[in-house]
Image (cartoon, rainbow, N blue to C red):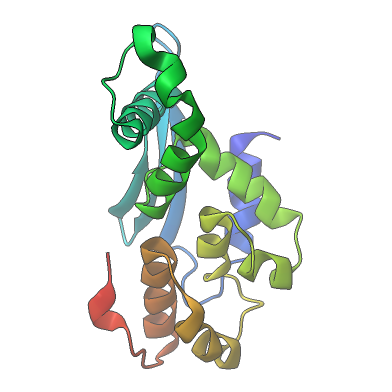
Length: 175
């Protein structure tokens, strides 16, 4: 699906109180060697999360895996830290470090999921986008506050609650 159409379909599902204030972006630098790019999310024009191109993200993942394995990053000892790659990915996602393709994948998954599946998804970006969904009403927003465990999801939850004129108990725990 074309990026502009995907973005339009996702942003059309946003609640009226946040429509136009939260934007999902992606770009490719076509004159670069591998047409690298990045994705990012903005609130009122301010960037809240940056998702670099795949090569930067892979480097960060491999470096984290090497740290977890207690070895230096390099091709000579790749087999030592390869088993730690999945753990490294989880840690990076927990720290809101994603790669450009994660946003597109999350948006596509978001469009093809029920709101219950969105709010309980293992994918942090799908849950984060779900906080902005018009199908999540004020009552449900208030019950979700206690179950949010990721900083990006919490940030968008607090933003949505503020936009709806609701009080939140974890405003001081933002990213």
